[in-house]
Image (cartoon, rainbow, N blue to C red; front, side):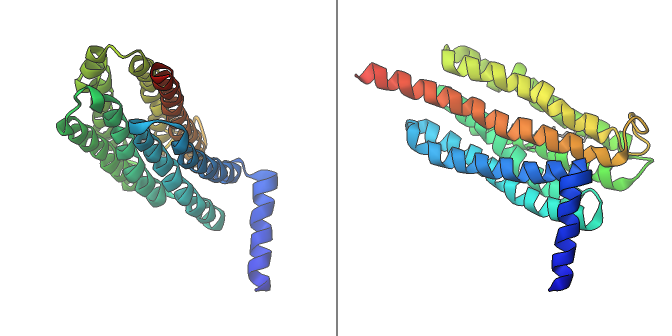
Length: 249
Ligand SMILES: *C/C=C(C)/C=C/C=C(C)/C=C/C1=C(C)CCCC1(C)C
C-alpha cells in the first residue's frame, strides 16, 4: 500500500515537474475524455443524420481516452513508448475516421465499397507501420515507405477519388466546407505521424530529435486530428441543423 503511494508520488512528480512526454499523455487523456463527453452530449443538439456522425466522433475520442489512460501509465512505469497500445488505438480509430468520410457523403450516394477501400488502405498503413516500429533499424525505412503507400491512397480517395467526386456532385455548401477542412487534416494533420516515425533509429530524422520524442509527435497529432476533426464535423452539423430548422419555420 505505502509502496504504491510512493510510486504514485514519483509519477506525479514526473508529470508536474520534468517530463514533457508524461505531461502530454496526461493532457491527452483529459482532452480526449472531455471531447468524448462533449460529442455524446451534443448529439441532442443536432438533427437526424448528424447524430450518427457525432456518435462516431464521440467513439473516436472515447476510445482514444481509454488508450491514453493506459499509455500514460505504461509510459510512467517503463519510460518507454507504448507502441502496442498506440497501434491498437489507431486500428480502431482510423477506420472510424473513414466511417466519418463515408457518413458525410452517404446522403449523396456513397457506396459501401468506398468505405471498404478506405478501411483497407488504413489497415495497410497501420499494419506496415507497426511492423516498421517494432522491426528495428535495418528495415523501418522500407516498412515506412509501404505504410506511406496506404496513406497516399487515402489522400487520393479524398482529393480525387470517390469521396471527392461525390462531394463535388453534391452541390452542398456544407459538405464542401467540411471537405475543405478535412482535406487539411488529412494532409497536414496526418503528416505529423510519418514525421514522428522518422525519428526512429536508422530512419531519415534519426539524431535530429530524441527517439523518445516520437510520443510528442504522436500525442500532438492525435489531439489535432481526433478532436479537431470531430469539431469540424460538429460545426457543420450545427450549421446544417440551424438551416433545416429555419427552412421548417
Ligand atoms: C487518430 C489516429 C490517427 C489519425 C492516426 C493516423 C496515423 C497515420 C496517418 C500514420 C501514418 C504512418 C505513415 C504514413 C508512415 C510511417 C508509419 C505511420 C503508421 C506512422
